[in-house]
Length: 149
Image (cartoon, rainbow, N blue to C red; front, side):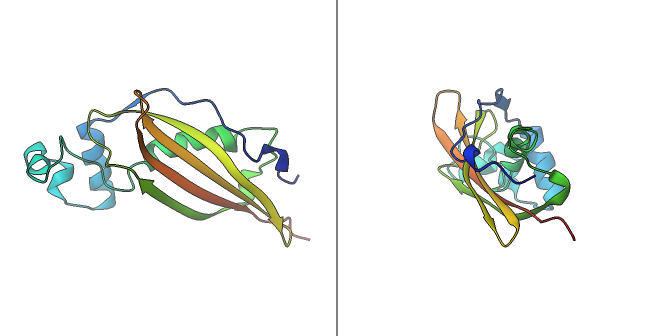
């Protein structure tokens, strides 16, 4: 089944609030092997001008991936995840993510196209504080490979 192009522009309901904690930031930094003390020590982060420990630039995946499951699991879209290649992932930050942030994710399907028998699905996931301040947008592109003859 091909991707339903009518889903282009669809916005999914916001997620529940994700409360960013120092321990989650430390665990993520450990997992990616980044020893930066600003991800662990509030005093170091504050000396650098931040209000608290900050998250590594790729930390948003912890929040954007579960939000993207709304798209992946939407039966009307026609996405066969067993045929998906992850083609692109990037984050555009308005400001760093800090410990104590309370973030909500909203996913938008930005584009759906088909070329040479492959489906292309582009999404944007915006992370904002519960007060509405934009923090980061995550962009993802999935390629749905065609069925083999």
